[in-house]
Image (cartoon, rainbow, N blue to C red; front, side, top):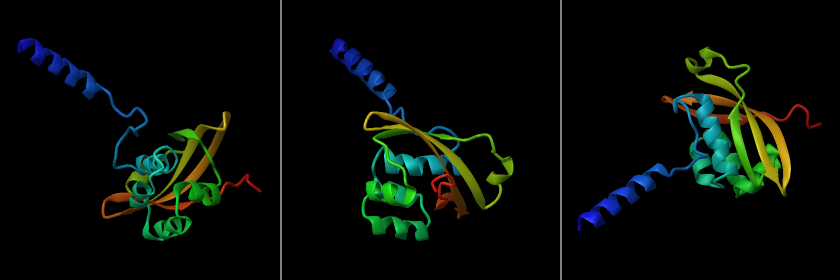
Length: 145
């Protein structure tokens, strides 16, 4: 019986150490964290409902009109990935953005599509409402045209 309890305790310890390595890191009260989780929900988890919770009502209405995360990201965001790593661009980070109600966040996307490496960058407008950050607008790629 003691052996069984020891094995069970070891298995529990090992399983709790296994987590989602792609989960966002950092302070959950920052606009960058919310923006990263928004795009992670769209690209990696392909969970429209999770992304809708992180969007303003105006953007959520637009997202719903596309139906699926892949349709939304292909047509409006104009980026496609099989799997992507999302990082914050820290070159223009302003400490004041955390104290205001509006922020502009730049994100760097590194991923693969059909085996090809794709690197891209997007900027999003964030709004703080009732203490939480929400994605309000995805700025168009200035180099796309």
